[in-house]
Length: 288
Image 1 (cartoon, rainbow, N blue to C red):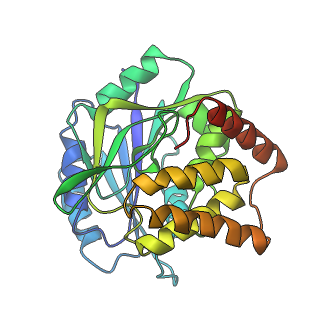
Image 2: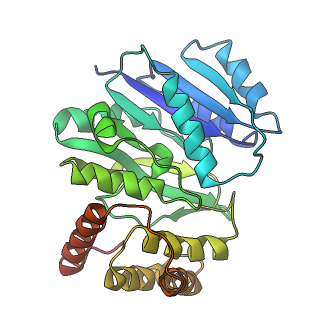
């Protein structure tokens, strides 16, 4: 069986991280190394990880200490990249990114590894994603040709082809890296036979839901999304909580960035590639 490693960036996750750790240690196939990067936590996150490190030698705690105590998506990427540096000298075939607030079945990684075995062109894989709040499972709309970053698993060659994660102030690094994977000829796919439970509303740990939707629109502009695709995608979000208004805020963020001529942090080749993809998806009515 091929070997995999995990990287987790954790900041003030004492309420959730123990459940995530237990989900990993119960796996039918365990990682050869799991780097958990404590990113300036002020709660018991590091203490909880240390307790498990003493029992399981594949778990390693790395602590980041700096003067920037603000939680944002760029700091998460810096923490992930810091963790990847600690993989030097470790043999592995797959690299998994794992958020500290998710759980899944005991055979989650076995199933994902089997998907890679079955398809040598598969570069990035994940499962079906649900937010857990208000006592219910709330599905997160996502194309089967896309993967949620919270449990993304990369074939090592694919990850290296993309150049890794780019720190972005308001997020979007997951969408950028999966588009980069497709640019390099890799397939990206989520599979509905393995389920991931995210134990809070997506984005709520950093911004209000309204701000998150507005920022999603700004991110889409910064990535060079085709305006027609973004309009249809925002309309599709009318069906996702908060109903209707979330889609309106997303569209408003996109055109706010357009009118204010926000910078784009991707290349022209990237923009051309992603717009061609989006026009094909419009043609095939695959808009998520």
